[in-house]
Length: 204
Image (cartoon, rainbow, N blue to C red; front, side):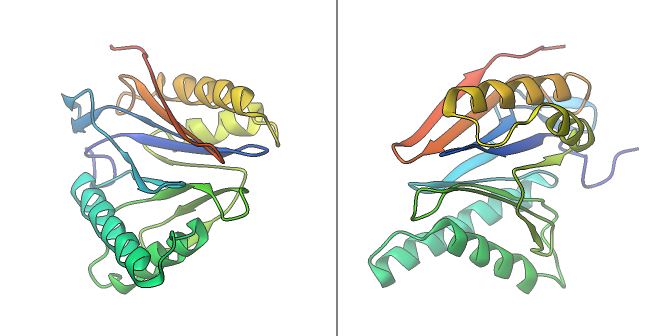
């Protein structure tokens, strides 16, 4: 039997390179073992240099994305500048913690670059407690993702090697999970902007 954390399936991985950050998600949306969609988007752009991905309960994740986009726009109008990714992480952490009595059943992952063009990634639990490491993961394939990342990840990779390593980790991890997969969407964030790539995967 599945619980609320695995009902919709899905996984997200983020890696930090020398000058860029990479975030990858699968495209499957399920209802337990039934696949409902093969083009579901778990990663959304919040500012020109930051994205948020989410796993677990999809409706709560979609609500969180809308709220963060609204907060980012309010900040830009009020302060006449872009919301920095570390400020976004603090905003999201506060948002999750203030809803602790009726928590959002999500595990968001933030990826992007800060105002000094340094890569930044952060994974949070449903109460807003963050973890900043060179690689973070969430979702139904989290054990596979973290195990492969520990084996294959090398610090300070350039953009191309970061993408190649990230996709090797992600595709091999979700191939061993029935609740994730059906393709992958990757976003590479550097000082020049955001590059989106879609990768085909096993469809069985």
